[in-house]
Image (cartoon, rainbow, N blue to C red; front, top):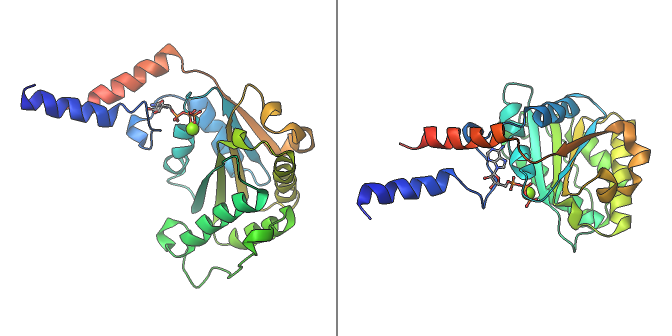
Length: 228
Ligand SMILES: Nc1ncnc2c1ncn2[C@@H]1O[C@H](COP(=O)(O)OP(=O)(O)OP(=O)(O)O)[C@@H](O)[C@H]1O
Ligand SMILES: [Mg+2]
């Protein structure tokens, strides 16, 4: 293969990435309706969101774009946790809270300054919806929090799911400045979180359909425009 064709082929592989979620706004196509719903949930105190759909429709890519779409707003700290089958309620929240704690040490990521952040150190091994609510309440006085749990369908333990619903209820009832975004492969919200009736009003449901032909064409156009 001639060298310039080799370079082009290499570049194509880094622009069209069917194996990895998109994390660059310029390559992100369509999904305006879903983006709007997420932004709505984030900007309304007491509102949380659940994003669900078939495998591979672009759920993770969409959640990677939240910071880009919030760029000009107030300071936000976003934590992202991937759930796995062995996770307990405590292990999930330990990962998320440690992520937020780590942001405290990088003020440019959202928290105004290191000293100004309260030094809450919850016992990570015994977290409950109430201790999580308290920890988030403290942390969110400095910056709005967005806590993402991706691959939530991996959680099969109903106690963990119920505790997550209780957490959403507690955050919502206490008007905490934090938004939980649950993401998972499912045909309905019911499949991911059976207790959703108790948090119906606090949970923005965002179904993620397959892309329209127009959206798919936009992916190709944006990618081709990038190729030099
Ligand atoms: N809005 C988009 N613009 C451009 N490409 C996208 C978009 N959404 C998804 N893609 C492409 O589709 C692929 C699958 O997307 P992604 O990994 O985000 O899906 P997913 O729903 O999170 O999948 P899974 O259910 O396996 O976790 C990505 O590799 C990415 O290349
Ligand atoms: Mg994904």
